[in-house]
Image (cartoon, rainbow, N blue to C red; front, side, top):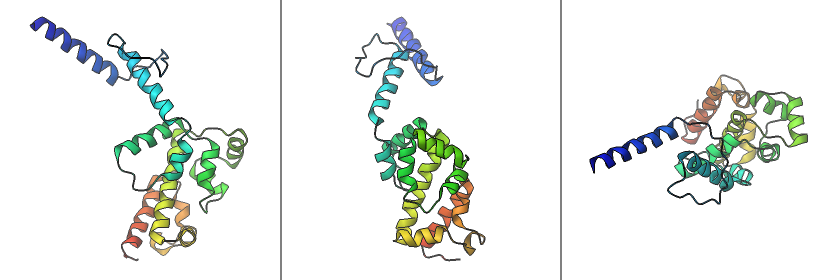
Length: 198
């Protein structure tokens, strides 16, 4: 009995270690495959990855458009993480961009790229890198938050693209290319929301 328990514990810890180390996965397993007791850890992880891919396939545009600034529950957070890791295509990005007052040159700065690259992405409907996708989602969340604070899309857009004393006499929209700048804009929106005006 004691020997069996020891063996099981050893197997268990070996499996956990295997998963935690994030060993690169080589074997492809179809999502429909039944995972039985004999299936290796590698296959189990692979199956989970494939199921994840299938679950979110074709949904990024819908998810991005409905994303809210206050998404803080795990299930939706995991969905966003998956979309960010996979990247979004230009068509999905465009569905976000058209609802903002930001021009192509603004987006090029925010996404740390060039106008020429954006044009190429549009032509080929290319997929953005995870860091760029994350920035697009953060901008989408900021837009949703700002519109809610101001109660009007146009008023928020005017505020975002005009010089503002509260943020050092600069245009809030010019701060969106860095995480710190994005935080400053969010903080200022929070003050406006609570009636604390500079």
